[in-house]
Image (tube, rainbow, N blue to C red; front, top):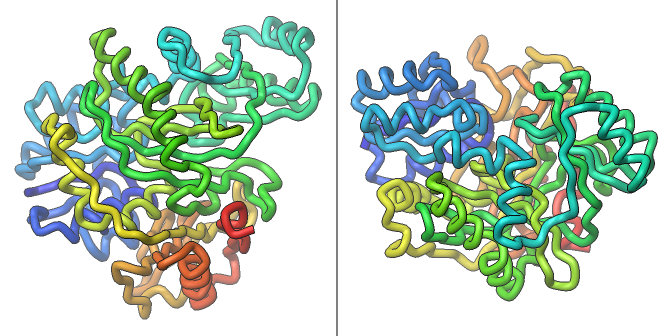
Length: 419
């Protein structure tokens, strides 16, 4: 198969790494990719949100399957354009991707099927949102109703923080002047990943992410500072309940509405007393959760993606090893605020990854025979182990061998599970 992956981050490097382990892959192109991905796959300079351009490129390059990594091409309808051109695509249509692209739409779907989630209200004017805040008070969750690269959410413990977040949204900081206000859910958060090909749902793994920039889960939200899989809080009973009460009813409702979801459904959950409630849906693999999942799944990732694309999930099975994986993000000093780029990163050329340890590139460029930083979250250092502690120790051992004075990591990834 000739395969095209759309995206340029650590998630796309992890998908490329897993797909290349499968002998069904004859040629792999990643657009636009990054410095690290360019060492293992061909790169293409392509506007990945232009559906017509992607379809034309796929036709020219005899692409058999397009895998859409990030959320923006999904919301832009790239999957629709590929379907119209008769090109197989892993990723939902724009209408189905509204489960991620619109917080209000997701809440409406949950209300329609009775899925457990936080009480909510939607506003398209600042004054009305402030009036609602004055009535209900804090703590409260403020969500920009649109794509915000994982950063358009503020958990406000006091009213002044909530007011500032609302003004930020309505000033256009996250692209849309619409907001969802939610009650705060309490418990432990986890991510549940399923492949969906309409009404058939196949669980493919669980993970826990560390969104906050600082150790002990403090400081501002980021795109993710690290993750580990599996998530201990996602017991078999909790997973079964999440499937029964949230994922399956939502998949069925999307079919009923004529907008079936096909792709990977990332279900963010809050679990309290073994009862899961929906925090959010994403219509793609998470980052850095994807790095953990691909480490554990290996080359079967491609087989599962193809089965999903062809509507054969009912016959597919996931072969799990009894192991654990962790991904530690190396970020540029200052992230998620202002940070420098173009800084040399040493220790990468001599590193030879394997099925148990990898360095996934998220924001690097190749320059003068080496790597330089080109983004906030720059590297994802991933490792597998027989238990989480072994995986963590292996990952931090790799981190300590990377020479980048301008980078930093959290040293406590996995602390909830390890104590």
